[in-house]
Length: 254
Image 1 (cartoon, one colour):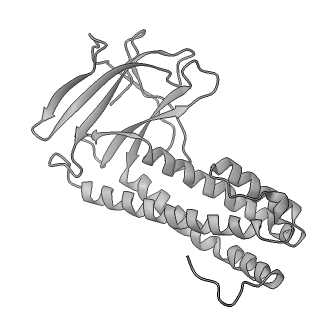
Image 2: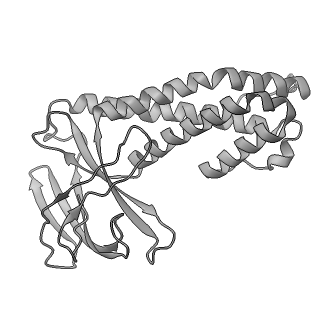
Image 3: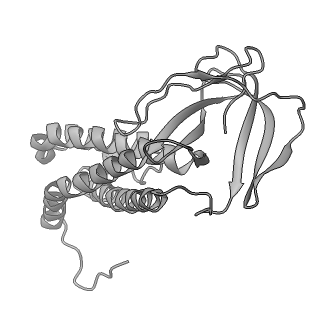
């Protein structure tokens, strides 16, 4: 799976950054030839195939969108072609997803608590779905609500780290995944992400990353650490909210 830039003929492995777990990467390799603009499906093995679609894309090294070839691996997961170490890779990926879900849930509960504090209506009346808007709500709360101001520095530090993990998680969840890299000393897969990009005619930008088991473990461990680090602050918010407006005795758990 790669972007074959028709003009220069090279497949650009574009630099991108999704937090410390996924460092920048550069390099160029010879292209696969693109002889048709029609979608093609050709077999990779007896258990998978390769879908080839030529589209207009903008890689990070391009100033303007150029014709490019997106190659998507189509096979079952796990695959009989997976190398030794694939089980550990999948396990690390699963732990990361669950750890992020718990961290995000914890963070969302804190945001909802902030909205229900005295003065919370100045922050808004609805929970934002976009992470950047959630970050604005979080910053505003710890800057504007008096009893929260002593926690401002630690709260903003937590926010920055949570945003890094969110970016890594989004890169993983929304990526186009290749097969495992053959003949590599560590188990790894190249991924391609297609992101919205303002100022481009087609509104998209492509980025390539290599994901290893070690990277997945690092991001999962960070999500777990942040979830526990957030606990003292969330407990304070809960106690403060209850002291100002205690919940009714017959309140239900949803």
